Image (cartoon, rainbow, N blue to C red; front, side, top):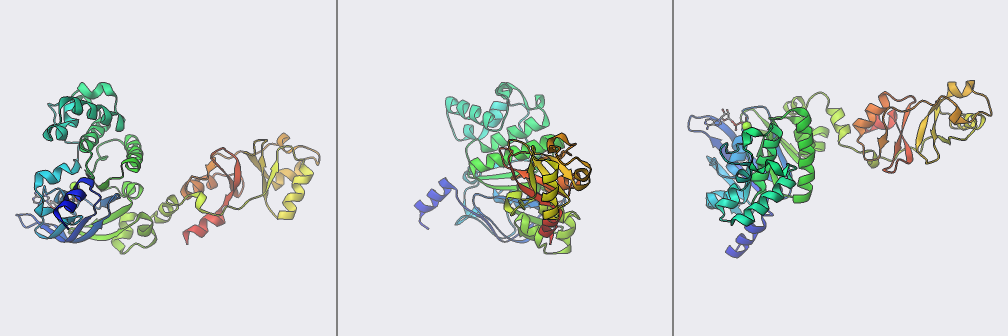
Length: 381
Ligand SMILES: Nc1ncnc2c1ncn2[C@@H]1O[C@H](COP(=O)(O)OP(=O)(O)O)[C@@H](O)[C@H]1O
Ligand SMILES: [Mg+2]
């Protein structure tokens, strides 16, 4: 690669991060990372997950040279990080520290503008960028002049993220970014972060000890085991479908099957068209539908083609022949299932459903078919 190509790549930053036999031994003899071979693809979100003390933070900190490898080689694209000037390297890499790591005596605006200031941006450009970032991470503009201790944990995390993104680095490192906030805030931050990543498409490496977070956010997940080695590196669905060892199985947890269901959406299945009748149909006709189909009940649809409720065979047997279906006591579903819902949500809906099936609707709320227990269990084998 020529020098010009290297500079170009550095600017565009569309590079994978590659660990080649990397180990890290601390001066006291602790082996934090043991012979790591790992390729983190460009533009993807890779999660490093594992129990405490297994080398995740150390691995992360070697990428921006806050720690140096004791052995092996760490490449960003075609470049060996040990040959890149550390200051230049860190300008290309945003870093969100554990516990936000904000400067307590700087305002939120000054915290966010840390790297632009180091890069010598003028005041106007810095202020514009701060405004942009405050909006991007969903903070109130009025918070800009406050100090970190005047913000909630969740707000501080957002500031940490804004600061890391300030100079638009192609690579983002995040160390347990959502660990310090309560579960509800965490859930919202995770969701917003996923949306943000869809827009910015950076190469992101995130550390967490929370397997749920790893499975939810990661394009790929590296499961670390004690001793600083990687037990498995794969996509979430591959980890669930083919865990490489007992350690991985234990770490993922006993509800592996349920997690697999959560990764698959209803629109990836061919739904059964199900047995339906319009709301103004009469009971005698509905009975003959049921007999012909050998079904235990029927989905009644309203005039918009939306599911109105379920009618079981017992109810139909008792009703008068000429009665309209909407005059009967239809059993509603507690959950409405959309095509974009996942199969775990479908299973929950099925458990509380009046019949053996749950109707599925499209974004407009129109009936598209049904899901039943058999279809779901087939997904588990
Ligand atoms: N500066 C250090 N000096 C000595 N040992 C360290 C240092 N930093 C971390 N360690 C040790 O290295 C191992 C891995 O630590 P770390 O990378 O922080 O793990 P994790 O982020 O997975 O919890 C642990 O045993 C930890 O105690
Ligand atoms: Mg750590």
